[in-house]
Length: 117
Length: 117
DNA sequence: ACTATATATGAACAATTGTTCATATATTAA
DNA sequence: TTAATATATGAACAATTGTTCATATATAGT
Image (cartoon, rainbow over all chains, first blue to last red; front, top):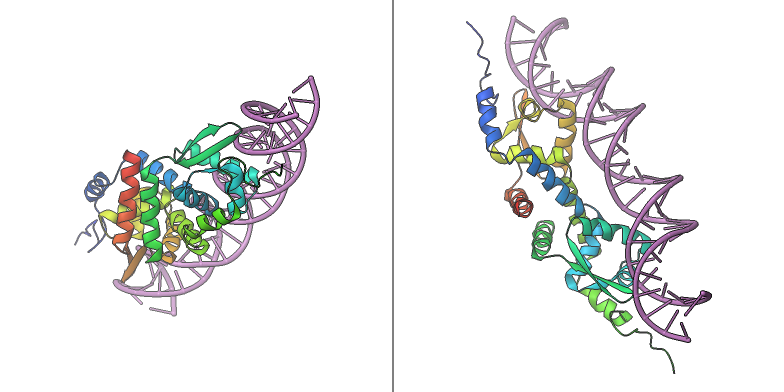
């Protein structure tokens, strides 16, 4: 008796595999998703966002608040800025950072809910 | 005239800083949050989760579907398993993986919404 | 123009992370 | 027991990433 190319259960035919793929978001979208989550995947950045959730802050205040160097902070702010998760405004010598929009808040909240169980 | 220790605007007093800190989640929670998002911060893992959202799959099917080596996949499955984002069940020689709970689905969905704008 | 203050950035370094390769373990069938 | 199949894992390596240090740019005050 000829062996089926689909062992009893749970081995996909290529037709099934194609169907499954169709039900997944496009590759490109998944890469963007990973990139988005990368922003939240570092504790320094999470702490920065967590502070900006409360209120707008300038760089030195933020650095003092979190206990990190101005340089390290500035590098991270640039990364968050490029990802459009934060925005800034200049006030003389000072630059004030805040969250870019409510999406950031909602992603943050969602994660918090999960972590708190 | 004595200089104030609070420059005109946007420099916090230590009392203000303490108030701000109180309104942030505890440090420990923020580290856990970053760790959670780390799981979603790699495109391979996102693709794995994305497939398991559709249906339960065994290791070899998943590897074939995503076009990655069995070894690389197995390593990533272990990471996701440890983070309790996926669960598994043994069916003879085969091990079937699926999402651990609806939380994973809701985090995934939230991120997708943001990426799609 | 010079000094002080606030922020940004390039380069080097250390640490973390994902993949590969080889091999181990587990289950089933002969 | 031996062979075949499915999955797991340790070690090595390459790539990525976050921090530090030094320095650059920008603004305001004297």
